[in-house]
Length: 257
Image (tube, rainbow, N blue to C red):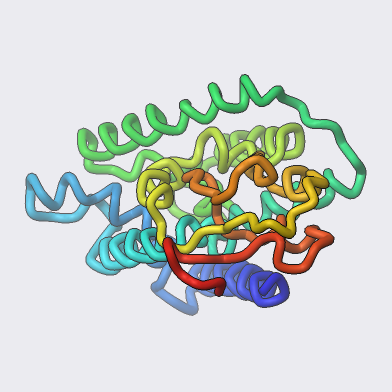
């Protein structure tokens, strides 16, 4: 499963870069925005009230967002750890930190508090997008700035913002995903009730390796079933677990998967 996930991640990053390069060179009219599910959420309020999509968003973005909600209800926030290119890059930095044994840059208390920032970020983006009719998030969206190859609305200062975001990810594991990503917090309540969950079995020896391996700071070893909306089923905990079947994927009341 871990090898399969890596293949998914690398394939999506390559695909996103290919789309961005082709558009920048004039070989295609399709941009990386076309495949962004967050665009469906950004244009939803305008669609309901004015019966039209916001700016460059369209039916495809809305369909992708609805499909993403269904996926999240089934398998939690797998989008973040299996598909999202920004999540892939963040995880890569996280793994480099682990190899260097870099200490955590923030306490768990402040980690929980800072996670709350995502909600006002989401609300502000949606409000300003509806108010202006423009995709105001586009110029600082890591996905768009990094993979559009200097696309529309990307300015020189966009790269400065992205530089600060990358520095934040280096300093604090998954900082963008944990504290600022508007799509992540929109998926959180759906992930909380997602069907497929990690369950800790009686084989667990309480070594704590799963806690250290979790990019999201979840205390895997302290819960019988992982119900946190932060869980992305990245399976990093199962990869480092020294005991076979100590962690299993299950549906509520179901057999191991």
